[in-house]
Length: 142
Image (cartoon, rainbow, N blue to C red; front, top):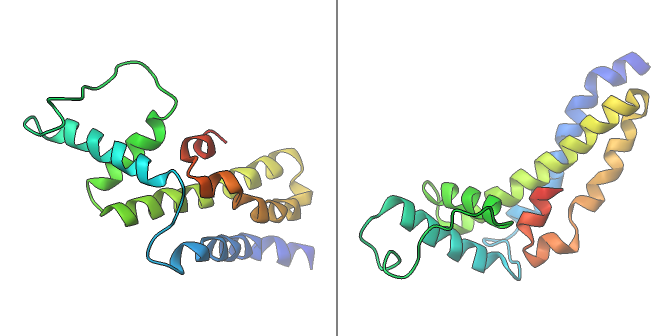
């Protein structure tokens, strides 16, 4: 019985991941307190990289220092090349809601593979308040 459960466990985990993403699909926008400013900064970055003649080139320039918010802004700027802003933000949050539980599961399988059920205990904690505040870069750091 335990061997049969081991075989279907990845499918069960994938179903939990899909259920975890269901909150992204109930509305047109993923509303956060700070997400709009991240999208605005990502749009400016995208414009600075893709257009030499824009309104932003007169005012802004790329900072060569490593700044904590770069990761989320660069990911969003890349996604904005292909998607509109509401979808780009949802894709970033979807990546976070997939990779954080997946990485937690990987840690469990490395430390205690017989206790893989503990990986499911993390799902309620993947939707935490800082994600809804728009702290994407903090969440990427996790």
